[in-house]
Image 1 (cartoon, protein in one colour):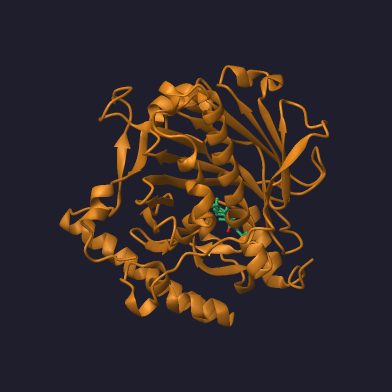
Image 2 (cartoon, protein in one colour; image 1 turned 120 degrees about the horizontal axis):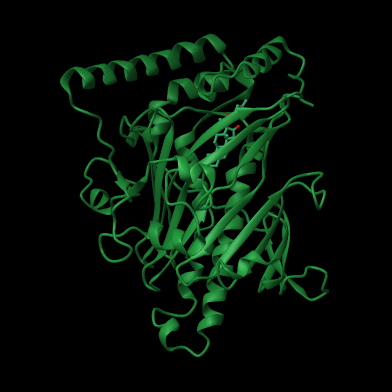
Amino acid sequence: MSSHSHSSSWTSFLKSIASYNGDLSSLTAPPFILSPTSLVEYSQFWGEHPDLLIAPNFIGDKDSYENAANADEIAQDRIIAVTKWFISTLRSQYCSRNESLGSEKKPLNPFLGELFVGKWGDEKLGETVLLSEQVSHHPPVTAYAIFNDKNNVELQGYNGIRASISTTSINVKQYGHAILKFKNLNEEFLITLPPLHIEGLLVASPFVELEGKSIIQSSSGYISVVEFSGRGYFSGKKNSYKARIFKDKAASSNKENALFTISGQWSGKSQIYQGSSTSSKEFSEFYDANAIEPIHLTVKDISQQNNLESRKAWKKVADAIKLGNYDLIHREKSELEQEQRELRKKETESGIKWETRFFEERDLEDLPEAGKKSDPLIGLSNLANLSRKNVVSGTIRGDKEDKTSSSYIHWRFVRENWDKESEIVV
Ligand code: 0T9
């Protein structure tokens, strides 16, 4: 329990949650629960293990599937490697505020066009670049690309959330997905984002618990189904997961068909077993989140940053949060928000819409299944039997939400825009 749990500011915050109107950013939270970091920064958590992100690139080569006698083995090793990388991102994504700030905190709500860019340097692997951009403010959507040109590896994705309130927790569904491309291998992966809930609100020390699933679908057909559960669920340990690797979506309808089963805690240790059972004594260690520290990207000093860059734009607000000065936080935030409102007003008056910088919306409704004008989501969602609409991440084709939604619009990285960028540098 946090010392703040009985404070009047926390109890009135809990009351404001109870009368929640759908927009989490509108809640006025007490300073101790505010993070000085904007949500646009969270994309970095996909990249804090660059070696694991790039590792699949070194398993087999482009012609593996056509020529190699061990094609199946190569495809399996690759999806296992991608699953390991995915698991390795979760501690950064969902525990890092607890580790560095003592609990989950309410991030700053990014403004439209806000940028967060940086890079991971590595002598052997080459530079891995992060571009993260707030592509929508209402509702909030962040898009990102993380790429390593030396190895022709590119991860891109976008995410937004919808939250609802239950008696003691906040339930969050994620929208969006990630696409991981290995251009040297001619193989790509679709990754769906799991639902989560925020617990510990009553005692003023919130933390995230994952639930449901993430799907990792390879263009090779192989699929990894990652199931999450929290404390008090099947294993009783916090941050538990089970990942099953199947030959394809059809095989995944029966858990017995799992070629490999990985089980443990994503914030701790997990083990990999051959086949569908985890009762065998034959297993090997899969990943130990505490043995491998995340690598933080390097970000330019604020003095070198553009006005659209997150840390520069939010500097005064972040400083006020660090001081815990409620009035100052409020004043600085209002100033930034007022500026944004004026920008939007001017745009409406002049009829010129804000243009996103590195990402564009793409309508997948009438795109071909394959070829240059296609989109990776089309083929990969076919393989995984997932909706290709802009619905809750991981929605199965034919589900209610898939049937009722009419939008096929998704955010995509436009690499050419980065190549011709002259003002923003990493
Ligand atoms: C994408 C991630 C996401 C963003 C955050 C729900 C949440 C905002 C979205 C989903 C990243 O890849 C992964 C990690 C944590 C998620 C955040 C946790 C959280 O609490 C916030 C929400 C908006 C709040 O701040 C709720 C109010 C607060 C009092 C709880 C600490």
